Image 1 (cartoon, helix red, strand yellow):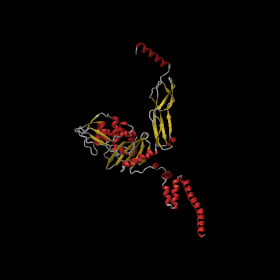
Image 2 (tube, rainbow, N blue to C red; image 1 turned 45 degrees about the horizontal axis):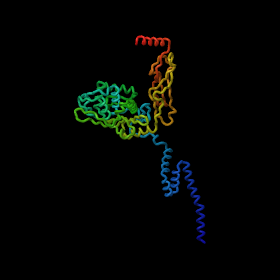
Image 3 (spheres, rainbow, N blue to C red; image 1 turned 30 degrees about the horizontal axis):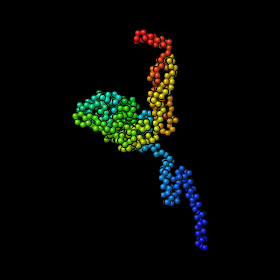
Image 4 (tube, rainbow, N blue to C red; image 1 turned 180 degrees about the horizontal axis):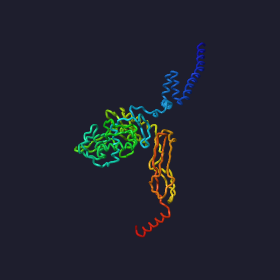
Length: 436
């Protein structure tokens, strides 16, 4: 009888306490789930609060739920890729090449030495002003320049193109002098051309003293200026081909084998989309790197000056740019941006088109803030030739982006007046009559 009473009391206790315990656990789970949006997090949290190891192990068996925990916590703390990375560089800039928009900056206008990244300017000037097939003879001044070298011999002959590969892959200081003398007549004249080009590009806090980057107190740039120069150079297809080349063989006069050049830019092997540009090092400047990468139609350039982990930091900065900005085409190449009235013409209007694509790197939602302004004349007078510059389009985004491109007429418009028609009739008659 006593045993039956004890059993009955235990049965009543189970009935009374078990639902309450379940309700309490369920309540903890539902409250946590409602807050977090993640059933997995609620199960784990309830198990931890109850100190029930078996329940915790059960919760952790739900792999998808555990993955959700990470996603939810990331959403609460913000997207980690949206936080600009730290860099050991004294100065750094990430820039989109076509728009010149700065996506990241650290001390962008601090004047610093740039070592062999100088050769970016040397190369683009040689490409623009020289002929790649020109044969260049190494002068005594070019031979034996200190620092990195392709070991030119006095009187050795290489084409300008071959020297450019030696300049940009092997970082040959002797190649830099040979190129400068060939293009400028002498090194001093070439340096003047370098400084003039820097001003044209907009690099106004840059001063070149030599074509190779060996240290001089008056030889300096800024991360922003070097990014501008790099972005400008990367618009040239010949330059892009050279700086994205990993290996190249060029002749070695007087030997029965070629020079084998390997690009010093390790990002070409390790970073997706990497396509340039140039390393640099002196004891004073320390490690400098101008790098570039192309992804999803967006060309970024990254400059780090005085940066010991130059490749790692550059990769992180490029990752930040690609993760947080997407290319947005504001104006397509050949897009009609207006029609101009034409007086005394066979056609009453002529289309005005933009010859270049205008692309902007934008954060999510920024495209709504882009302003497009088109300026065209009130009218044109016939005759009008196709390709005549007739106005411009200006694209702005806040205070940091302003791009202006010229607009051109898309077609010819012949004059339609009594005088012009009479002239055409006479010209046609004369052609038929006399066989003109």
